[in-house]
Image (cartoon, rainbow, N blue to C red; front, side, top):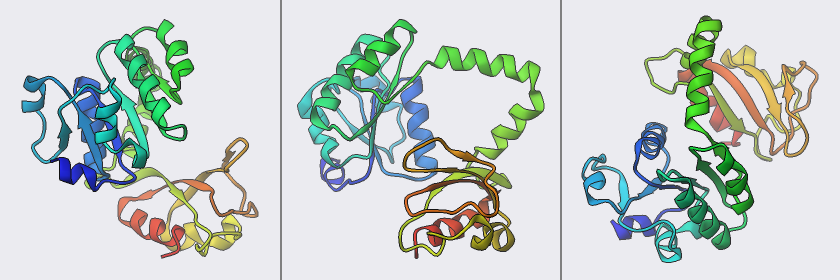
Length: 235
């Protein structure tokens, strides 16, 4: 297990195998993208998928995060069951990596500012999200159903919303949305362009230029997304 973890690069570290941590791991495994899950509770470890990389340790300790190769990680999730533990995890992780993207779970709204002060880029409050989701299911049921289908990456779903980064070697770099022929050739709609700086460009016009480093927020068939990702990467 440790040898496999030592090979990781560009991976994600999930701290805590509670309900939130397990769900994050499940979603990442479906992509699939590499990740390692840190959990110190032996009983919880036994309930995890045997194909996942699981590191036995305390995520508030520097040594544990170093074993998870935080120096080569793309992101970290602080998903412990208590806000205090997550604050310690974020503090430790941020002290080891200034550029790492850190997302933290919070139970209490008051903990959000402390987690961000500690170094979290994003704080998610599951209970707030659940309440919003329930209300929207009453008020906008068709919108909610559409988004459920659109953001799913299950192969049985026909349409998904994805983000694709354009590299300097891509045919799309410095081309306009219209000239890229993304919609005409692949049937994929460009919903927005996220620039390296500045606000996103929603519903971009055909004349809008795509630059290297941009993220395209797109919607289309699952089967065509792989082709778009390859072309955007210049492959």
